[in-house]
Image (tube, rainbow, N blue to C red; front, side, top):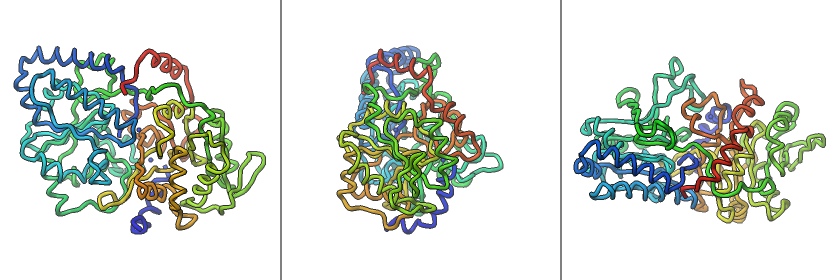
Amino acid sequence: MPWERGGGGWWLLPALLLLPPLCAPALAISVAAEDAEEQIEQLVSQESGKSGKSNQINIELQEIVFVIQSQSNSFHSKRAEDLERNILKQAEELGKELPRILLIHQMDRHDGAWTILPLMQDFSASYGRNSSWIFFCEEDTRIQIVKLLETLRRFDKSKEWFLGKALYDEESTIIHHYAFAENPTVFKFPDFAAGWALSIPLVNKLANRLKSEPLKSDFTIDLKHEIALYIWQKGNGPHLTSVPEFCTDDLNSYKAVHCATMFSNFLPVCGDPVKKEDIFVAVKTCRKFHRDRIPIVKQTWEGEAALVEYYSDYAEISIPTIDLGVPNTERGHCGKTFAILERFLNHSSSKTPWLVIVDDDTLISIFRLRKLLSCYDPNEPVFLGERYGYGLGTGGYSYITGGGGMVFSREAIQKLLASKCQCYSNDAPDDMVLGMCFSGLGIPITHCPLFHQARPVDYPKDYLAHQIPISFHKHWNIDPVKVYFTWLAPKVEDSFTEKKQRHIREDL
């Protein structure tokens, strides 16, 4: 099996992964379609009028290939298609030929297309002679075409350029394998939400390199950091060049007029939040953590959940915990997870559409999760959380990393258990086995970057600044109660935002 080749890597990494790392696109509320388009049209008109260079702009537009980092889930694909239409509408108003726009989820020749690098040879072969830039963006990135073209014009397209909004680690972090430990601030990587660009000479160089150095069969954990590392090539390739016009400010921000890209930072609004009773929460624990971890859950998010059960290797009435008859294992927990799935299907109400499985040291906002799930159809097989990958350069599979929480629709669980796909041992890595099973069934992983495998301190501040997070993981060297109430607990501004959102029609 493919994951047996990486067995050593798994046990080493989630020593890395599961110690102290989010919908790819980040899920965020967009301004109403009409309002958003009107604002962008006004900006386009203003900038075009200033420049008086519509012919030059439109000629240059043919030289950009837009790549939307989309997903196949119906909610995400529709948002990506809306962005595609918005780009094309702006292009039409400039009066010339339309740009080429690609949606990652439609490039299904590559199971790992979302990791971008496996596509470089295709990009080079298809666009290496008649284009100048590949511009990548998320489904919730908003683009002002005229400003983008003006920005790219500053860079010599005959040279190798890697452009984006720069993120960096303030301290070395486990999700980046403690890279650049002496001074992690020196290495910059792009915030995908702001969009990022590669010049065609760099794309061609990467494509040639991939011919002679195929991607290793390894883990994909934080794609933006790993792409930057690959391009940097231990100092032999370009660093990321920070572009101030690539922004993550909201469309309504006073900074928007100076930005080529913007990004909305709310949770999506797709109707009323799902009911508390529609989410069943399963907490994986074991006897040795009953006294230190379970009290944290009860002090923080348990009160947000209507249906919650604790699954352990020991039945303790005071909590209470349920013994599933599966011995505790030091790692993996596949046997326990599959027993939880079977229990949910066979013993919970058939009217409960959603199951969430979390670790006993996961901090989660059920309040926000209810809003998020309003955007997904529980009649579809949905498997949602923070996406990782294994061996995707050589035909591997994607999976939802367990620490940030794994969300299943009942339909997904029914298809999974009907397939007879199962653990090879109780201590097999449950999240990876689930990923392999769903991959075999043709059920895609749905990524949401609002779920986090690690603690807030493990992520750049600028990255978290445009998120409304749903979960964090690990109590290691932090006050978990403080983290919950700082980052995840329902606040007054959540109620304000919810009221504000009622007056905004979602751009779906």
